[in-house]
Image (cartoon, rainbow, N blue to C red; front, top):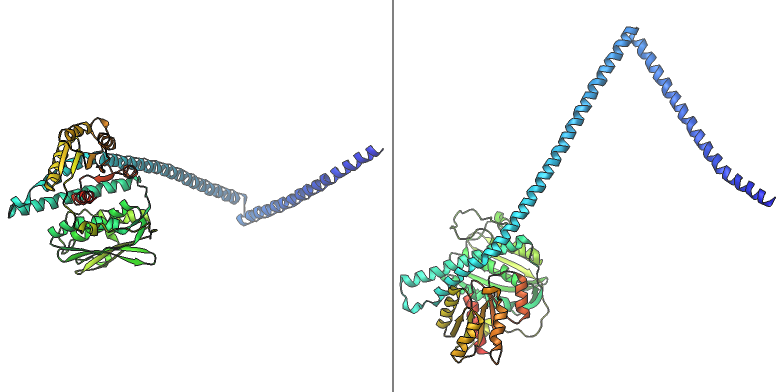
Length: 473
């Protein structure tokens, strides 16, 4: 009995929600029915009114025919609109496909250009490096008058060609997106004291005074990329300063160190101050002479500044000069930094070094050997490490310094050639790698191995300062 009662209660409990649900459904159906009746009634009233207005069955038929024609026309309009929309959608899909294909083609073309420049850089830099070295090896004391003037002009022309090649390769690297900044703390003097004097001869050849105020501040950035920025600013200042001077200096600001380049050049009108950072943009000639620039230097400054999160500044007064600057974050000092310019300017002893030159390119090998001999050193030039060792042993010498090209014949790498020479002697002399490869991984590898990396075409001022520093040690 209790079980039966429980079943009855359960059934009642189930029945109540079902009945409530059925009540709701019935109420809804009744409401829908009442609404439908109202609609039918309203429609009948409208039809009756239409018949009364027409006055006869024939008139009613005419109204119906007219209504049917209007519906047919409206249907055709809708069909035409639908067809037009369909065609536009198909056209849009075709355009999107064409844009996608064009983008893929542009990406492939850009990759091909980057690979070509990377592959061709070695072949382009080798003869340029040879020419610079042979010009440097010429004894200027044996020349006079026009011959000496032509020699200086040839050096300036080749230096401009070298800068242009560096610019094109920098653009290719930036376009490829393959540059990853390598941040480090370093004294700004380690950068400026080295590169500013390299422009002294260029400034003198242009009849300009290049002044530099050293600074002891530390910054945090990518030294190689920051060097590219400063080089472009100094080169740009010299190019557009027909007379006067160029001043490179630093100023401490709250947000970072301001590295600025002032010039007394032709200046730039205010409406061009932002556009000049766009690739290939050049200020309309006006009173300015045509130069070897192609409008890429400042665009590289802009792109590297964005990459390194540097704030750039520019001020200019037409006819009076310009100031270009970047603000670099401060770094953490790590000991006392010694000015390289001050060290180089001291009373250094003139010592002759026995220098191993390893390069499989005869032009570079002979040109570098002739330049080293002109500087008072004793070069041993060879195409391989084994040949260099044989010559040193035959001359009863041991190397004080080793310079090797990175890519040697037979897929031999320069660091391996340096180690082969070092193994044959009691001590491991300092060494440097020469390369035209811009891969930042190679720069990092050289630093990890304690090797100096020299970029082709060789910067002869940098090389000479390096040799003088080693001689003093």
